[in-house]
Amino acid sequence: MRYKVLLFLVLGCSMWCFAQTMESEYNGKPDKRKNATYFSNGLQSKYREDTEGAIRNFEQALRYMPDDAASMFELSEQYYNAGRMEEAFKMIKQAANLDPENKWYQLRLGQFYRNLEQYDDFISLYERLVQKYPDDLDMLSELIDAYLITENYDKALEKMNQLEQQIGPNEIITEQRLNVLKRQNNSKKLIAELEKLISENPENVRYYSLLAQEYSAMGKDKEALKTYEKIKEVNPNDPYINVSLLEFYEKNGDKEKAFNELLATIRNKNLDIATKANIWDYWMGKNEKSNEIDEQARQCGEAFIETHPDNKLGYLILGSYYIVEQNAVKSKEIYQQVLDIDSTDFYGWQNLVISESRLNENENVREHAIKALKYYPMQPVFYWYAGVASAVLKINDEAINYLEKGRRYTTDKIQLSNFDAFLGDLYHEQGDEEKAFDAYERTLRNDPDNVLVLNNYAYYLAVKGQDLDKALEMSTKAIAAEPDNPTYLDTHAWVLYMKGDYKEAEKQMKKALKLLKEPDETYTKHYEAIMDKLKKIE
Image: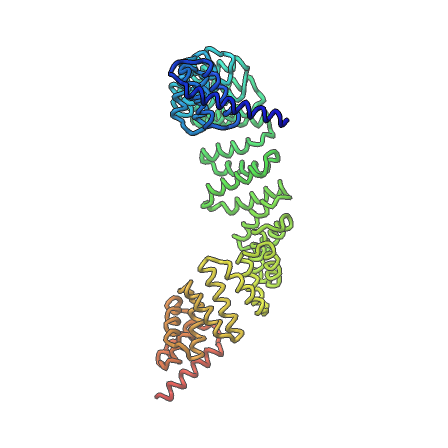
């Protein structure tokens, strides 16, 4: 084998040396022998994918025979490969003009016309080619496409008929013909074509469906409905008939019948669930502001569960309905079923702990939020519920741990302020006021109008007799937001008391006491302390 390789290299070197010699001897006169040598070298470079070498050789071949169409054809390809499009186009045009009988030159020229969107030239060329090669169906198809692109629909239809005569009835051609008639807005011909197709293919419900759509577009609703009913008669198990009727009734403003067809679509066992899900999303998007949508969601959820009991989609829809309706008992039951089907479903875990939280089932909330974190360790919602439930269960160290972790995974300012507010209260409960006050400061940076934190922070500062001006500013803001909240009025009174403004403190405390529904020991002690100071002053 190596001897063959060596021989090839020696021959190649000899050819190259010979070509160099010939190049130096070029005198501008045609020379077929030298042309053939360079052409052969050019083909060798082409097969080695040496584009630049091929270009040099084919160009030399043309120097010795300027009218060599074969060299032009090959050189056009190499120019194209090198990205020299204008030269490639020019070269193939010359080749095609020199040898108009060569089919491959003409086809290559046609590719350039099409790529450059010179459709008039493309059509002119392909009309000649189709006439010369009537059995080449690819050429005929290319010509049809060009007629469609240039919107020459009559010519396109003529060639489609010619193509169908050669290959027989063809569904692709039929679809093209129908599309052309639709583009022409030629309803009369389109209906005639569809009726012909139905008579030839009485079992093909697609043609009935297209006919019904065309009747509907023309405003012939009776004919459209009659045609849809015919589909049910021909194929009662057709998976798309209910979808078609849904669109028909919706277009005509009959929402009730449209919704009934939606339910029938969901219950149709011949239609795949992915398509049903898309139709459900479409319906929701169109009708989300409707007063009836919640009840419709319930019915659709139940229909999905009835038809696809092993798929979680219906349970998710029905669970959302019960969440909106504040029926925590039912939503808990439904989302447990979601997790029985898919133990990793995010909404299943989220809405399960929300439902249990509404039922004050704090042990379940804690347990399920912690389980959910195994699947979603970067979701702050589960850290929140784990932390809050732990706090309610008086497992404060654990609560603080979950809340501190959860706050790191949130970028939402309000959500972050909720974490920090809760942490502030927990740290205060543990007696770590430095961390508590730091958490309150973070809360107010993200949510400066958080009334609960404004009140609590102000009260704790007042109890310590610390930063009283700041405490007064916060308590003033709190009662401005909720002037009839006795807790906030009590805090405001106590801040005033600590600042020595006993008269104003008395005034605010009396307001708080009047708003109280039941006596409170703390309020009473505060009032007595304020009155004691006032008596001493008097």
